[in-house]
Image 1 (tube, helix red, strand yellow):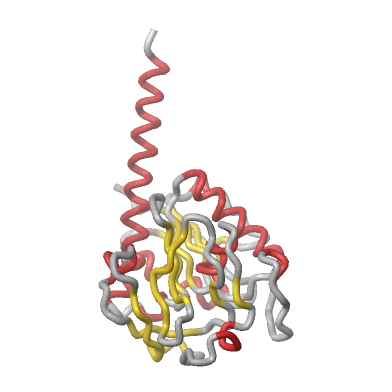
Image 2 (image 1 turned 30 degrees about the vertical axis):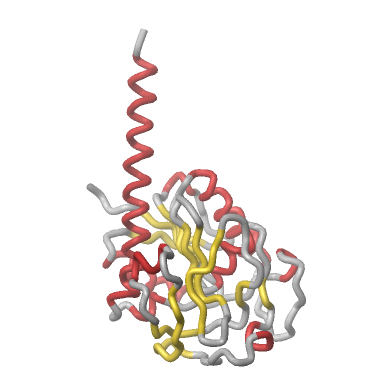
Length: 240
């Protein structure tokens, strides 16, 4: 069977650097990545799963927040990704959110963000590095715990925003030691998981690779289900 295709949204500023890492992780997990972004073709009909990538802050216009002067915004990307998250949900297509992507899943489903996360969670470890320097606690019984284990996880951090109120049908899957939300997930299928860190930079860590593997497994299953439905419909259309 051919590798499932995964649409990956990227930043216009840093996508050239980040996409190859995400594509590597997707390939190692058994999939094939296709780069998307504002101004690039993005059609869910062409893929089996979706990754909303990192980079750029989300405009407070989408969630009623306050603009931080240091924010780097891309309204066209905001519009594209919000639409993709909602369309993927309607199609029951699996979605993985990375950093900004976790926040976008939450915002698209009606949640809000802290524009200045570390201003709110002052006891959280404030690090800015692709190296694993931040400890997060995985929620027991969460999908993330089934994917990557329920022991504490040491991850990286490159974010200034974070999830505040949860979007519809989402729950917290991980927090840092200061209580800041570090992962969210859908309560039920289709697969939707957002992690605040950047697992693509941690491809040498088995637990981080499992996150991509879970997406590919879900995308493979979803593709098989769609093909089965198409076959049934075709058979029904041929009956007299």
